Amino acid sequence: MMQRWTIVTLLVGMWIGLPSVRAAEDESVTRRFPVPGHGELELVIPKSWHVSVEQGPPGLKLPPTIDIQSDAGQKFDVKITPLPPPKGRKDWTSDANLKRTVQSRGRNDLRSAREKALDVKDLKGTQAAGYYYTLTDRNPDPGDFKYMTSVTLGLNEVLLTATVLDNDPAKPERARALEMLKAATLVGGAVAGGATTQSTQPATTQAALLHFTAPSGKWQVVMDKQSFESVDEQPHDGAKAKEFSAEGKDGWMLSVFFEPAAKPGDAKIARAFYLDRMKKSPVHMDKLKLSGDGNVAKMEYMVSDIQQKHANLYLVHDGVWVDVHISKMDFTSADQAALDALCRSVRIEVLK
Image 1 (cartoon, rainbow, N blue to C red):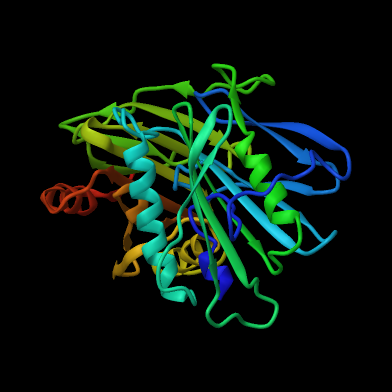
Image 2: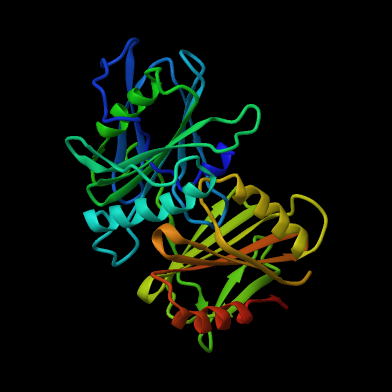
């Protein structure tokens, strides 16, 4: 099914080369989308195309996905995600890493395609440069898209990924989407538009522990500190929800998200809710493993495109769901023991 191919988005493509496309058969508008810490992504989009921004699942720490659709000409869908470089990752948009990412994604996509091999093509604009390929769904369900084009671009220090889904390669929409992405630029060095800055508050540390206080102030989540420092705290939805985030050494990242429970039930119910939401996101989860119980439900998976391991632990207390998300870039088997130890340390403590 082509919807299976809606993944950590990867740009858009054509069957042969990239034909010249008129600037627009209708008016275009310039839109900018914040890329926190790296300026704004600027796209020139046909005015008749509908643009929305999809927020990623809480705790996943991914930038929002830009979704562009239109029913004019043919129905199609373009999803674009700008991925800032992980801390310390200097080769993020190198040609070698772009090729690795395309090949990794392509191997996965070929499982559902009629094609037996990838036909990877270059895509290069004034600032953006990278690769793309197009595949045909082997067995599309009624209403699914038949074709998927996936591209990875380097845009200064940002990795731009996108997916274009359509049904007719003879029509111009796919090529126009490619031209739009080819002309993408990254502007500015800071987010414009008066975006608020997170307040940085070191989490309480005691005996090498981190303490994350729930919105009610009556209880907290406690876990090992490991190498995490400078924990940021940000409220959500007034005082009803709260998020903490931190970075550690060697590519470790942490977030702890509190929000009111969406339905009654234990930690497994919370995990099922978030897992269903994550399956609808552009992120492809490899080697998914579920474990734990109704007190602490665990989920582990890999994002193979960027060799990043994720572990989410779900807890429920006092009508609040907690999502503790731990991830590690360039993950190897040698990191598994540290990840397991962190996961075992997560618990709830009631404050007196």
